[in-house]
Length: 425
Ligand code: MEV
Image 1 (cartoon, helix red, strand yellow):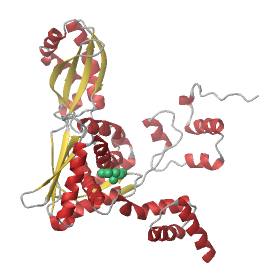
Image 2: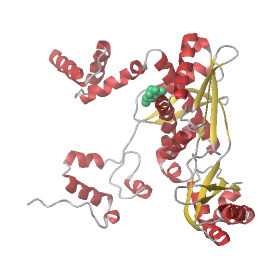
Image 3: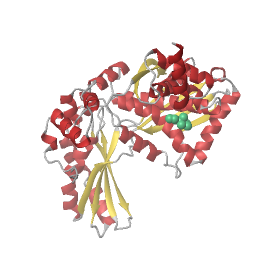
């Protein structure tokens, strides 16, 4: 009788990476090649990987590409992007090139204000409790600032508090917002510690019970903005400009389209966030929540015609990224990417990423409104398909080229071309 395998493996976390891999290989009947693949640690060694997360058995590498042609606030910058998707890096290069002579991108931000939420329950008089908490602002500031003297030394710390009363399906709740200037940190740890420190006092002052104490990823006090003008000549004329604007208007009117439109923006944004060791999920969640701020999910960018008839693009989105702490500091490739970017503050990084999001959206909309997206995708996509069909070395480019010429990029076509090519040689 076959004994069922059990995923209840006690002490798995205490094993070495090699021992864990052996256990996984046994459980999943992994062949030697698969185990050897998992043993390749790439740019992050096993020891460091083990410090970042639990139960490590390997790492996974992604290509880091450089977006060229980007001028941001008068400064030329090379931008590292980590992504598995073809055309994403090229899209930023193309958008940057087409607005370079117009001065590139101008950016701004609201600074690095993060929000932590403290949820207060079991309150019969929430409005009364709200005022009780507001009256304690100075004391709350003292408690919060004591959590992070280093942040305070750098000019950060609690900026203000807000208290909201929520009507919920369960009971009224009072929610305290701690608005904290986190300076060059992403800030999650700083604000979460503050929320936890202040919680017992909130209970004491109000008689209620605190449950959640956690940051909000809707970082709408930490907005990054970028704008640029693309000249009509640079983009190919009025029809292209109007096509881009029409594509944008569709996104504004239709959440089905807006989701894809914003996904394209996040192709660029997340690639830089990842390359710098920042939290892609935090940025994604914040961006999509911000896209619904006007009541309906819409575009994170805006596209308009300037008085001169050129194309003006702008973007505004939450951007909770840091340049100190966590993987940004520990991951050697993230450190290298920060060096390439030459950023000296989280604020500069926020603004660069916003510019990349706008550039990405420009190229996607331009392609969609003109030749379609597939043409640009094809060259690299065809190479991927050629590899999947078994092409090796020089065969890859030759199979891909023939597929693109035949305008049919499919694995069966790649296989046919490959067979033919091998017969020819
Ligand atoms: C593909 O990853 C991104 C696009 O779908 C974005 C868009 O449609 O705007 C091309």
